[in-house]
Length: 236
Image (cartoon, rainbow, N blue to C red; front, side, top):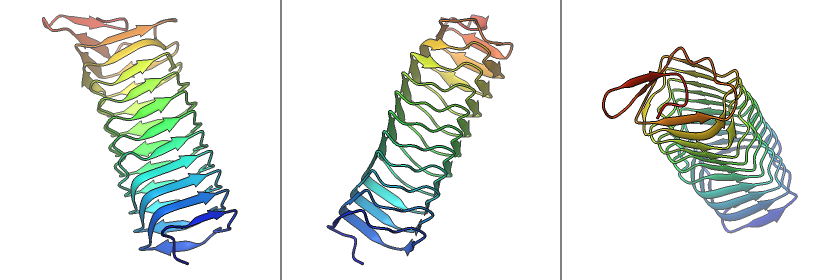
């Protein structure tokens, strides 16, 4: 069926495969996409609202002005995707997989993504707002200028990520693990870090303020403009 310029409600696309499709100026409302597969597809000015896309896969797809609202994308997979400015509002993204993809300006607002995994992704200017994502994992991702506000990210793990000029406010990072982070201009204030652990992390010209018990920070070093180094949190 043609996908451009359509507005459809309640249609069942479960387990369907789509290759090389251009989907433009379209609205999908309360549609079913469980285990559907999109490959080499282009999405332009597309809205998905209240759709079920559990275990859907998006391989080598491109998104322009694409928005998901109140959708369930649990265990969905995004691989080799280019999606500047894509947004997810009030969506479930539990155990979703994001691999070797570019999401500059990604926005996730009021979402839940327990167990989500990001690997080798470009996430510059990421915005996470009022989200819950315990056991979130990010490895070798670029989060330059990320803004994270009012989120619960307990037991998250960030490994070898670029977090320069990132900012976190009122975010729960209890039990989180940070490894191999070398960044400048980081401001995390205030955050909760009880039980968090930093390993081989160096923050230059940065400030991290924890409202609760300090984390285990044997591998966290703050370097100030004058070259003075502090160890542990609350460095300024």
